[in-house]
Image 1 (tube, rainbow, N blue to C red):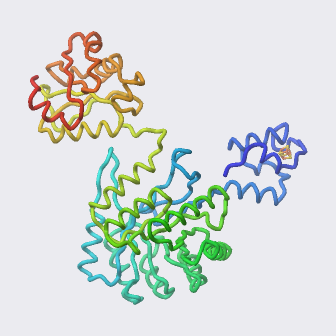
Image 2 (cartoon, helix red, strand yellow):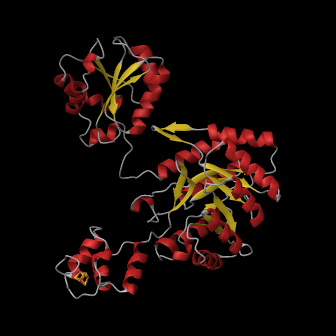
Image 3 (cartoon, helix red, strand yellow):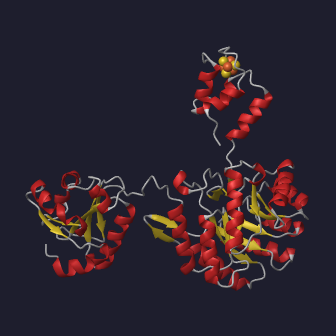
Length: 450
Ligand code: SF4
């Protein structure tokens, strides 16, 4: 947690010697707090003060990278308990488990289906983040062969799941340079897994279901041995236990700054779940509170899509609406006789109306006004979607050059703007469209005439 200027000042020598270029230690401390200068600019800092300041600068939950180059994800580095306090930064990775004893054909089909699956929502393309390859067979050779096969098929980030260090080493050799997450170091194999993490420069998951004190003891041992890119698995399953434990871990990291448990959490919602639906619901709970990596036992677009959408919603900065660029968009291949609709630049609004126009069978022009990312009614209530702004957008984006009929269709929810807009655009015919985007197709079928 960032220190205040006064807290930093308390750690300085307080001699006002000016060697840092500031007239007083207090002035220097204030600048450090604003991140305007590095603490190292004070040459007289004691080792103790330096250590305290560096520790304070560390994020409460370590940022951990899994994967390499452009095929990687980052988890951790969260600083709040609740999204409304600030925002959440690193969405949990959704991985699909591939067991090494699946028949080759079945395994390849699963990997292919997962890697080809993607959906677009509000202009953002979403998909699963990678694979967790599980040494279910307990056979090191089979595990290595499975890892080799998957890595030859996809470049996605990987979790390698085995408790036998020999099996893990054989698999790591097949995933060289991919920087997979090693899952898992346990009380029985910690030293060997730590050595593998160091040798292959990989992040390491530490698993200890016995309790949080025991888990902290293991992470401290791993960190002291030189592996700090850790992920933790407290082993909690089910709705109640996992909510309780994951919340406790987040509170300990954020509120108590308890470093031994300040790492991203990996969960397995399918373990102990009685159905695919229960696994999906638990995964939803873990997205909200507070997993960093979620390994799904099952893959189905019907369950992955809502999870991806939930994740997108929770990890969108609530203070920054997702917006599209204002301008005139072509929906399909419109002609100069095609309809022209107007809307706001809130992404969800834009993609709703664009999708409905696309499926209406009427290629159209869509004029998008800059409403600072607000939806139709919100923007209208805030004075950001009024006749003046719409008229300015019509002129700025030269809407009249796209069409030959000078008709503009307003969203039905702002029908009240029609009169004012007719005054602003005297040569235009202002029409009032339907209240809901989903009715635009039937509106055009029954009402549209150029
Ligand atoms: S160099 Fe250090 S001790 Fe001297 S004024 Fe700056 S902060 Fe204070």
